[in-house]
Length: 93
Image 1: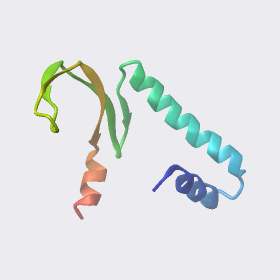
Image 2: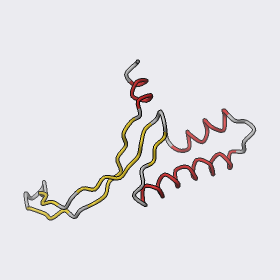
Image 3: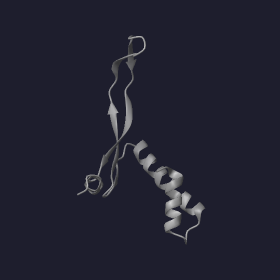
Image 4: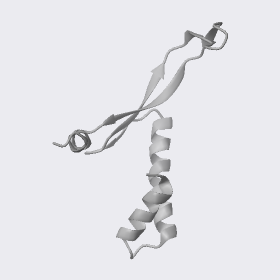
C-alpha cells in the first residue's frame, strides 16, 4: 500500500472528513515519526511495531565491481521491529 492508497482508504472509511484533511492528517503522522527519529527518539505504535534508529560504525568495505577496498563512513539507519499483535496476525495466530 502506498501513501495515496492509505489516504483513499481512510477517506472512504470516514466520509465526514474531506480528502485534503485526511491527506494533512497522514502527512502530519509521517512527519512526526520522521522528526522523532531524526532527533534520535524511538516511536512505538502499540500492536503495530516500533521505529528506531541504529548506528552503523565506520568500516572498510569492498567495491564489488573492482574489488578495491573503500572506507565506509559511520551512518544511522532506520530500524523497524514488529509488535506482537502484527507478528501474530502475520503468522495466523
